[in-house]
Length: 167
Figure 1 (tube, rainbow, N blue to C red):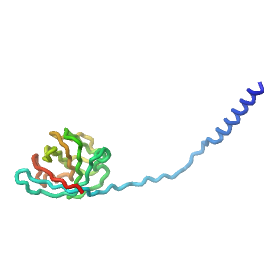
Figure 2 (figure 1 turned 90 degrees about the vertical axis):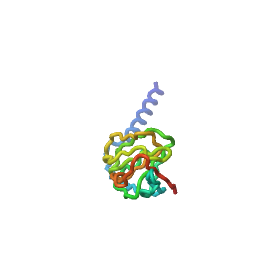
Figure 3 (figure 1 turned 45 degrees about the horizontal axis):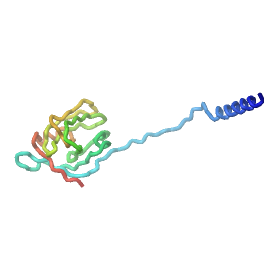
Figure 4 (figure 1 turned 135 degrees about the horizontal axis):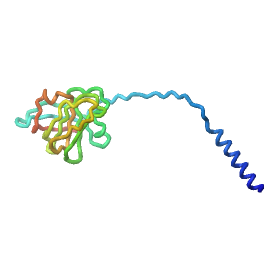
């Protein structure tokens, strides 16, 4: 009986100490959220060329997305991009692709490019923050994102091609 009484006392004392370490007081901690500015990082150059004449339409500085994180993030959270810049997505295989504009604040033209580096389709003027699927019309290994309207200004069409120089 004495042992049970000692065990009960020990459990009670432990319970009191455990309870006393728990606080119901709300701590007022000031948390600041720091906004990160995502800026362009030149990782290569790209030339867009006319299919018929092989003449250079324009040259772009490109940022490359070729891993899971960069391909899933793309140009999300960017406030702007210069007209001589773009993002080139490089996939390990050629397949039908589909992009959307979730968390993308700038309107884009999305250019789907085959394994042999020819344009197979263009999704023009993709709306910012829109989650509508924007699919390719044919298998693509590469996808180029540029500012909306540039594909019309440059008169890009299916069959035009790209050359890429990676830094």
